[in-house]
Image 1 (tube, rainbow, N blue to C red):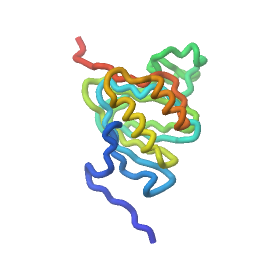
Image 2 (cartoon, one colour):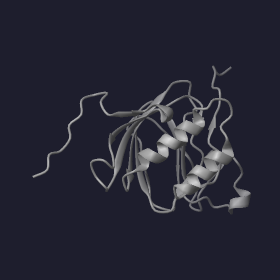
Image 3 (cartoon, helix red, strand yellow):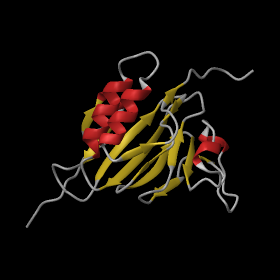
Image 4 (cartoon, one colour):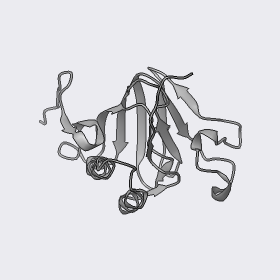
Length: 177
């Protein structure tokens, strides 16, 4: 018989460079990893796709812009801001609050960003397990400070079976006026 895992609030392995807490990962199961993430104001993960992985996002607090569809325009015509994309059927980016979710099958372009002035929190599940090592590495690149090194991000994503479609960015967000 194998025991499960019970974690109290706030428990898990912090991945400080990525702003995430690993709840369950490859050390427990080969099937999936689960994280709690705090998404800072102005953070944009950039549109990308995984060739093999599937993901599930659930917004716990705050608001995020969410994308999980194939854009109608060809890659060269999409532009750098994925929030302007639309699918063939007219689907556009969702501004999702607490309780919103996003499922991302393998091969589906997706992104999330926090356009607000407050941090957002989400629960994030990815299959197969092991995504924690990718997040550790991407967090180290972004955590160097200044403008994120897009070439380093692109290469790290490529090495982890991820195709980058738009850049990962961190914009200053201030009061609207």
